[in-house]
Length: 406
Image 1 (spheres, rainbow, N blue to C red):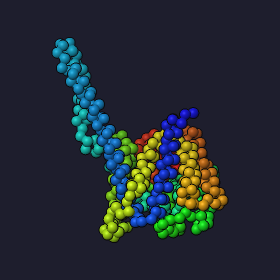
Image 2 (cartoon, rainbow, N blue to C red):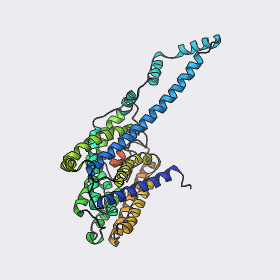
Image 3 (tube, helix red, strand yellow):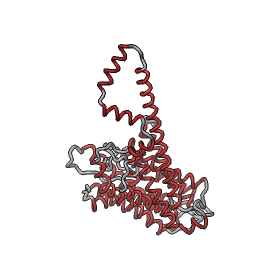
Image 4 (cartoon, helix red, strand yellow):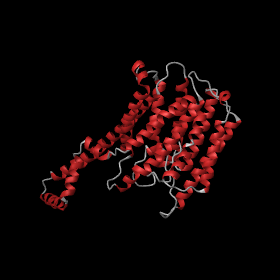
């Protein structure tokens, strides 16, 4: 078993990204001095993701043009041969081409980057609804991390599995197996135990004002937007994707579309929420290299999911979640002076058990599902939806077996 296999490299990448993001975000929100605005950080995050995905699409386009130009020059070289037999052969070959196919090929070879983008993006303005949920979720996460320790935040945020299941049952009329229901109940108990811990005695020090209850409400709100985002995709966006005769857009094109809407919504939200502070202290108040690093990890998180969906299965992703929580707890204890109590350890253990039961059941169902009458798995969390390609296949659809838990 080599650790250089793609799935294990993805596992390491997911653990590093999750752990570093939460710890750096927590540190950036507790250090002394002028605090940066979370709403503007969300704007920069979406702008960075938009530019990155546009860059990948531009690279893909240039690579495609290079191949087309190469094939075109080869054809021209053959047609310039003055041998009579070759010329006659070329004429016969040309007559065998269908006129429509030839026109389509010429159009593709002379396709501009703007036309390429229009063909790839396939804009659906209903994606704005998903982008709005995604923007609200990110803003809530900044509020949550500002008021909760990194380890407590990560454990509590696993409640998004519960909200996804609840919205699926209520709105999509999905049925849960007994093992799923037991796992969700254990998850609820585990998260509740973590919240019953001695907060003030065990909390890490912060140079900024923090309120435990505000943090808990914020992370629960983020869990709700995550769960509802999955149901929104199932109810609104997925039916059109399955009935569209055109090839589905690539994962990068999907993210360009989502990030474009999200950036507009995040920009408006920033001025509605922190307009006075932005006008008086500036849009980039409190920014530092650390804040830029946090935004980079946040933007990278959405892109990492695309790789995770392709290579990692439920068991590996669940293991990555557990390792990330354990790592965050250890680092918080040594760096942020977070006190790990017996109650916290008990709650974490129950959450790990619940995630394992939930993911293992999904794996079993995917192996035994051979007919449409089998139970469908629950929707993925919204961080997955932001990265799915919207097309067919086990890795590109929301109802696939690959449910990301990050």
